[in-house]
Length: 228
Image (cartoon, rainbow, N blue to C red; front, top):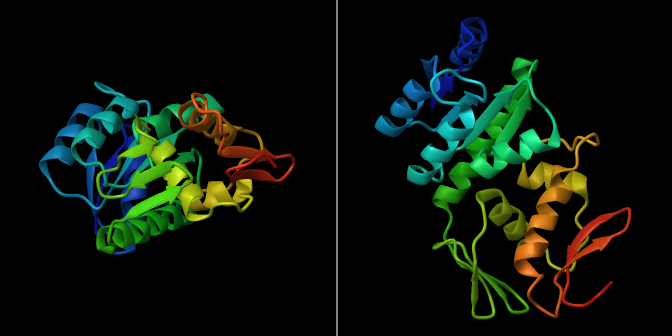
């Protein structure tokens, strides 16, 4: 497995590289965002790890531009920032996971293995249509429709809705959503899951009389065709 590491702190970069090399990964280092973007677009990597604050081009822009060309490559963002807004911005740019510095190498390795395993399943799986009420998701074309209206979603919004469509009429806790959709442990100090649920509501429910996304107070969220 080939992993691209974009990190301007040489000490941190070398520590990550050494840890991954010891686990049998083939790693490439870039010390600024522009060089990292060029490498990511020029060569084939199974996963990319990038810091957010980088010289020449920040990690958000790197992630966003790479996503346009390689939508399926797993991306983990590293940052010293850990607020809800920071996480939402990273996920909106296309990151699959978010790790706040300082972190333990074994935690990074666990996140990497989960993403690589998930990506292999996606690559080997067959696409199909998911439907609930008048909501339809095409996993091949990534097109989402409600009735005759096509709905534009970010990658994380799409992943969240896909998980809800796989588990309709079942209450999904914030912990479950964090683990299954974001592949991370739910941080009770942030509300990024609620933020994304609200994003989905605005796009899926706002212009329709029948609401599909509901909140179960104190428990989580549910995709349901009638009020709880």
